Image (cartoon, rainbow, N blue to C red; front, side, top):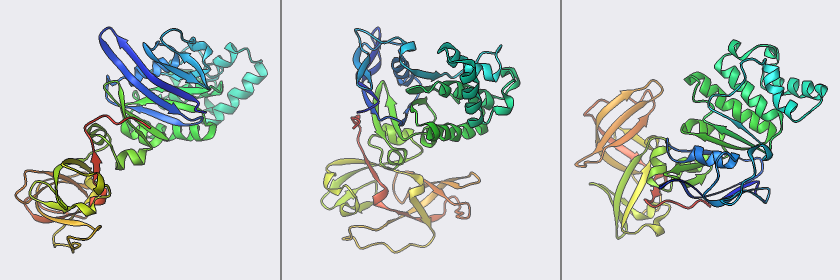
Length: 368
């Protein structure tokens, strides 16, 4: 049985559908991120799970029992959930230990149990030496750890996080991504994490649900989501990509002034008529000398296309090139290693593997 299940959930504000027919099932101990741009409905979905908003359609169940429906909803305080907000919401007049122990006091644990549980969780989040400090004496990352400790110490059935790292600087955000994942691996609490930052979602999640205009477009493990996006929106939102539009003619796929044998595509049998693909910049390699190309009848192997460098940028860890196949209006983004230096207007050969082209669709994919 799934731990948390959203079935056909919708939430409308007047004529606006903030969430529209959303379905998602989460296993016990799973970490799922709701990822998408501002206004896509991810925070509204989280607030419905928490009981802070009521769905206008559909149901939310936990452990097989309905906790939210248009007719009735279980109050937030009876859901055994902890929620961490963007602002942390820790009390400035309480010490670290008092903040962390507050939920245990509300639940009427004994003083000895509160002390033991608070000491234990503070060691886990590396704040034991700061237990008597006040929030104003802590850094942003330390305050975030206090919020995490307070949420986890009560051992909730579900942990909800709403953009928890958005107030931190870049270095702290990167550090806290791994901290959140470390804590999840230690406690295995079923977790729903809302973010617009794809790096956060990729680092922390078992699965990512990419949302757009109130709907889920795709739910998958981070690696699958990146390598095999199902829709144009998902492909463009998760990292950088090139979109290649073509048409199937006989045993070939025709692109703008170059062709690739149909047999070289992993989904060759499903390709008909007009087709679109996502190709990541790091899946293309540049050469000064033409590399060997497999015979046209080969079912696998790289394809080689003549082109010219039209733009470049050095970003330290890699080069970012824009390359145009000869006579084509198409401009491909290519990521190359720092020592792979090509000049603007230099003639090059693009080597690409059709197995890395992900067939995408314009229609919203229904999550499995």
